[in-house]
Length: 315
Image (tube, rainbow, N blue to C red; front, top):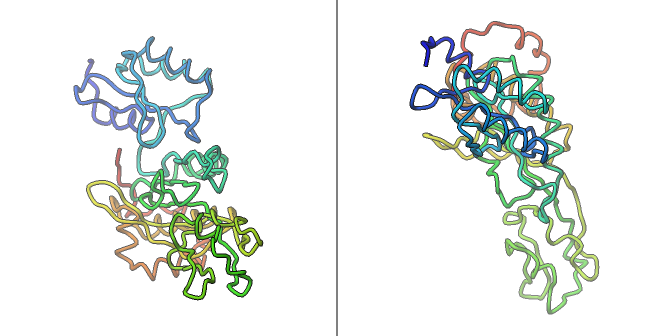
């Protein structure tokens, strides 16, 4: 391979072209937006891999597609070729990363349209915030239900679909065989010693399985929406995301992401993961600032400032 400076390698990495261990070849990381590619798009990826790479395509853990075996000379032709199908590379650097949704849109357990939400967040935060430098990468994960298939609590900002049951024990008819208790996967619903069904709210995870299963309509839906978790980390260091104990609307979730990003950019330190930032300033302090929303008044100032503490880099 011709001599390429470290600065050139860094610039290519920022575009989603990452040099491999042999220091000769690159992978091209193609963004899938919502974890879905059409048959025509897949055909273009496969053809591009054969024409410009070594013919191999890898799937990443965050639902992007990596074409392997590119050389420095084939990067630009490859880039032009996939662009014909509306595809592009990226997904690296100290910025908001591509959104990762589970298959809640089509899954029988899904409580929300995860892929539609991912597409919306992709436009707002991956594209809209692409040039905003953060202290470190910022990953957003969307889970359609409490099954945790994509582990939203291990993302910097995790989102989970929720359906909270509405139930009053005074409405219970005391059926000897309780359909709600049988349906509850968490065993949060159970008959007490008097034969009345009770729901342990500390155990219930709002999966919604019990709703409308009572033959006498005792359990209905109280609220549906999204739970959020902040500061999850999965890597050399681990941190389970802090649960914000409320159920939000989609509009509120979008604003919470923006508030989180603004606080992180304003107060984070170069190379500091979002979860470590939360730990450093204090969980209660962060949640208080997050919920107050005062940071929104400083939005333009935060985004325009050349903050000295931001700008760490990561793959």
